[in-house]
Image (tube, rainbow, N blue to C red; front, side, top):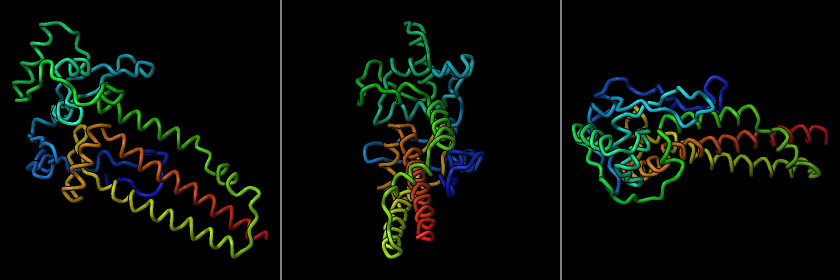
Length: 258
């Protein structure tokens, strides 16, 4: 996720560069050696980039005819830990009507791709909103959330509320500014690390940058939230950083008037 630089932009309010990774299958997939978790390894193959199904979106208020792409790689992630979706839940994810014939057809298609999904195996985690949305839907949800944040989050008003009725002299303001700077620096350490997350998502397989121990845990987190978790944390840190910047600006203005 190296595409996130600075704050959010009007063009790409997420700040995440979804198209920055190499385009060839060999570069995207690699040899799979860096995609292990502490619990299991998902074998990668060129077929992972192929679209398995185009499904109708659950976000019907947007456009009830819009379809989302579900790749072979996504299906592998959905049946892996921590979701461990079974055949029934995969059918619901793909919006396939539940009949014996449709179930048999789905399993045959999956078997052709060497994807073995339990017929009625127990899911590791309870079904939640993340397990019922495709990865593309989660990305769009994240996009829309960040657009709303960009347009409506009241940075300046919050900054003014924080410093309201807290008059300080020059020395006190300097101390506060240092505290804020240290807080922002600390948050940026986490943001910088998360921006190097290389968990596979949709048709993107970025090269690994973090240690195996860290990346394996982020892979699990990504499969649990379908990358929304990391993206939202990065965005939250940026919101806090931008708010702190407004506080510093307001304090500097207050200092000049003091």
